[in-house]
Image (cartoon, rainbow, N blue to C red; front, side):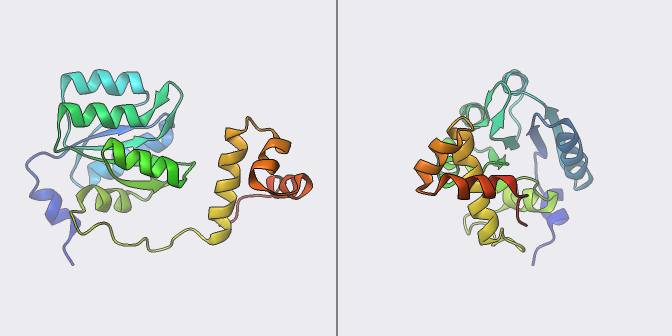
Length: 184
């Protein structure tokens, strides 16, 4: 197996844009990427990211999907317009198949759930045509189900009755699920 630090050391351009509106996560991820030899630029909004891309298009990007002032997909598209060979990874706390497909269509090379480990992010950024390795500890089926329910609930404007109807589930059952903590 190839050591990540050797691969990073051989890169001609180590620049990476980190876009996330969660400041502590953005800072922590930026420090972790820097400690691995990359040169991160940290931004907290779509507006900041697009302004940064006008000045310099980095070789890599780690972009949050849902931001307060827009969608990270627009940043991935702008990055690929500015630099077609750039590699971007989408991060999201609201993972679903539709948004993963949209991210890949926009040009992202991978789609990772939050919170993502820095090593997983770097592996995804550096992975080539063979695709990323399967995750060491994938989400449990209960967690995937819970996240899907949360996503539909959010899309329905936090309307329990509408969410239950769309999920073909009894409203009381859904209320009990929503009252519980997220499974691991």
